[in-house]
Length: 303
Image (tube, rainbow, N blue to C red; front, side, top):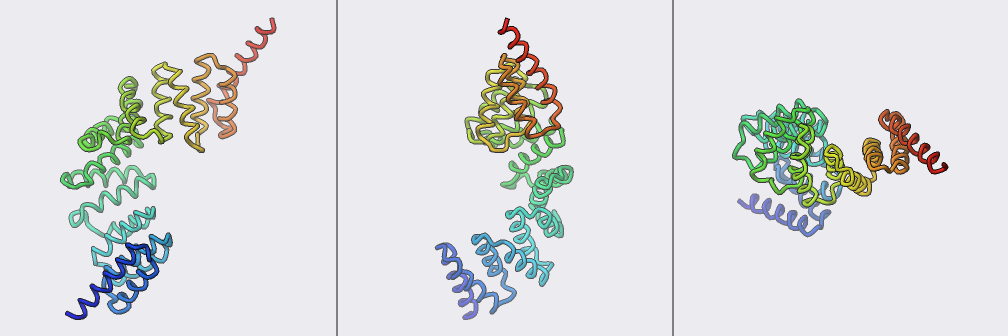
């Protein structure tokens, strides 16, 4: 009883120091517990969390890896380690660690593995895992989130009708979440239901006006609808909101400018598009058209 009391007391001290931001003190107490009780999982988890707070992930990964090797059948250790890896964007390692847990033992591993595959761009594997999770975890708090990620996965796979079904399942809890509205807009855009895409993309912009990709999507939607003034405005807003505007966006903005008789602006945007991607064929062809219009205007003005 005394040993358990001492153990609990040291853990409490460690957690208190951790909560106060005194991380080195916390680390000392956690390591003391590990030295005295080498199989006590909570102390290892505490050390890993402290290293994470310190921004020093690798020692935590090595510690947890060695601890798991010492007790490979321990599902609690494996699940904690898998989530730790997931949290720190170690996608392949997450899959390796969690794939040893059967879904019927812990269905949540399907969600975690699906997310890791999604982040790796392995969308077919992501879809399999998200579908497995959704089919067995309707009561889980992650159910709606899984549907959002499955919708995003289906979009990546160009299965837009399936994506719409998934988005509607997530609508119960996430109707006022900006990303779900952006997903709806992207689905409708790709289904050529451009008028349907307007409301969700505008709602997404209201909910999160700081997300550059929504402005790009809005620009594309308004371009398809022939509302070139709004398209131009949104493409420019996208470019102003990010340092990573693509050659494609500058090309679409240039094309938009051509539609509203701004050939000089179009020519300038095509030039930027080609600086970003010299092999952009749309920009190469568009630049020829814009240059021709500008030259004709110069000749006309000269007359």
